[in-house]
Length: 394
Image 1 (cartoon, rainbow, N blue to C red):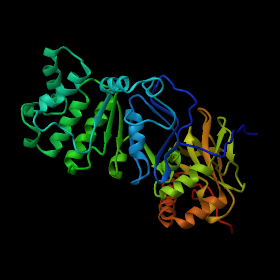
Image 2: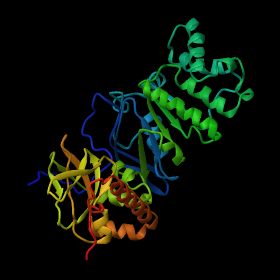
Image 3: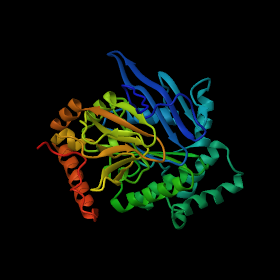
Image 4: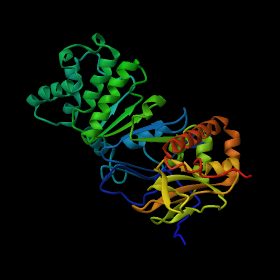
């Protein structure tokens, strides 16, 4: 008998309090705008935790709320409700605008899509500006510090040039050097590659990856799906709410509205180590997405000896073959031996309904299933029956 915990709603982040590893902790953040036409809520109770050293992308369609979310993180706008804790500091509760502005200068680097460099200042002078504003480093030390930042991004040879005399890619690198001038633990970039060619964009992302390896937290808003594959996490916002990251990772081909639907109806289940999730010959009534832990797919050989033929990790799924093709399970699926597994489940009827509405997803899932079948057949040196988690009805 398994021990399970279920909840009807599963969000991308559910945290009651800040943790030492958290750089960004948002709890129940609501943002409502009011004008003559009435009220419009842009953020609808957002919970989000981003840990130190993560390189995170935030994506969403125009009007989804990503710019407003960014404004909450940077302290540019005020939430209507909820808490925003950055680096352990609640930046809105009992904090004046002057205090928040000073905090921003010392703790946050912002990279804009259009660079926002001062055109009459050299690159070196642009990088020195934040140090002057935040009153950091001795006056005589600032040029040296600025040059070190330009060296970091490979622009030391252009230090005395005006922005108009360097390429757009080099202007963006200079903007990143400026954002790093005060050694902030958090770097926020708003569409930093939107105006760059592919080569320059790759240079920027390479730099962000290196900064994250050095312990910086990097949060990047982007519309470019090719960039999200290089971040450690991909956060999707739709209509002011966050899509569950496990849903987005498991089924990236779904439309955002279907991802959000699965986010709201998914149930969370936790199975202790080695606990059976699906039994051989049993009916499968749910589609499973792994959130934490590992799942083992187990078959018996002709001598009834147990063999683990597949291990599935977070972001992978199982149960789809039976749900789409029908039949009973011919394998046991269980939680891994190293610890409990947490899965999100979608009921059969909901899964099939959304698959019918998303032929692209249906095709992609089908290809993954076939790849799994082919890989297991090739690896089956002892001539097991062709691997399939679920057999078709005879």
